[in-house]
Image (cartoon, rainbow, N blue to C red; front, top):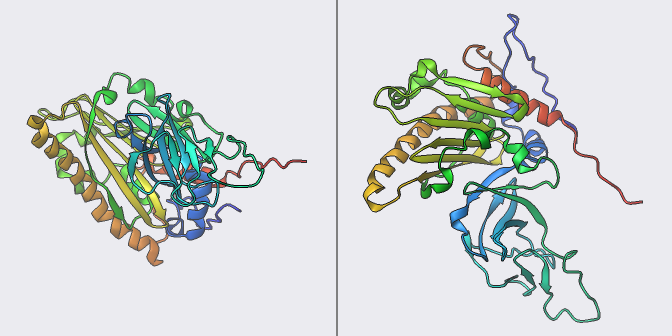
Length: 363
């Protein structure tokens, strides 16, 4: 599959860099390439550890268009698999979360797989055939557990999770993320492209116009976006105003992981691309203290954060409509405020230009 052929210019006459062309945000062909070269190759936030505390606990969902599930093994390790039986391809689990016994039994023909994904019981198959339990085990998905969060990667090989996360691990070391507890979610399906959302997130040029609550809490005039292109990482920061929240640490890891960490809680967000021009925005809120006495305060804090996301979505819904309409093509990027957007879009360009890995063909 060839890379996208974006025919629009990349610079204005004055030398300013231009955005990606509008068709990149609404093209089925571009989205198919993104699925292969971005979504499958990167680690993606999938769930949190408290959902599957015990061996046999599982959580299911979709990632890059694939049905997958993660399960805690008898050894305490989280493993992940495609939600497909090796016999006839039936879905093994249909609940969002649950618990299986010693065997994960397919609801179609009752083939059984152990918690490590090995075939354990091809029930009453007949004949003399003997199945290799590893060769006929479930299709694996890479899994990693980091500080109470679970990440998956569809494509085998590539970067380890530690390498993918890069300096985030050290920079966030003294924030108590793994001692915080899930409080609530705010998920929404939105008619915007994942890149439209990323473009908006990685600049604060719009903040004074659109986010009065954020401006009251932070000194927006000192808002900065530091780019680490070698790690595909963005560090966003601004000092709190007097009476504002405690210190915080804010990261965006390409393609769409958002970590907002505080001593007292965290807002953890990602998007699941559903198609060209459509995402599911997923936001989880964790707090150090989730006692009933703190519930109302925690809820106010989460709703304050969710309101900022709502303000963003309200405006970029119109952006996405215009990107799809065929009148607006490109615009200039501010070197003062939108260098993060430029870096993000260059990461998209680079990823889509990167050829797929060579396929080893047996002699």
